[in-house]
Image (spheres, rainbow, N blue to C red):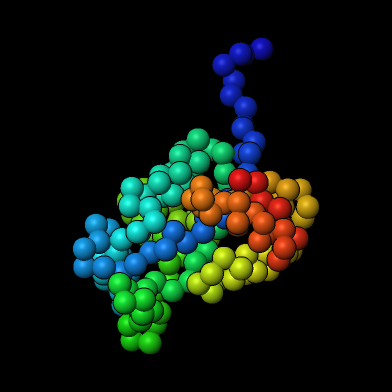
Length: 168
């Protein structure tokens, strides 16, 4: 028997829910979003070093997750106004997908976007609805990715507003 035969590794997570890191359109932004009717610079005030994007990249490259569910609502400007062009609203989940594919080179097939209200309960409600048809084995291995200070609140809200029990 050949000991060099590699076996397919089973990912720890069937999916990882990635919360919007509060993307803001800003002329001072270091990142650019350019897709469809949109082209603007943006920043992530709560994550200026892009740790959330880097965490997705690391989870993807290591094979720990099969898929990522990017959830978020409106992109807002520095005046807290929702960004829209030609009647189309800019959504954080689309900005995250664009950046993860173009800058971090994650194939789009592994990234699923879910539009939601601009709050954690709205995010949880929409994602839970999206995943409700999955079997219990799939749901038992769903992770959640947010910043360290938001994680306890997010997990508590999942317990209060959803049957989903994601793994931090």
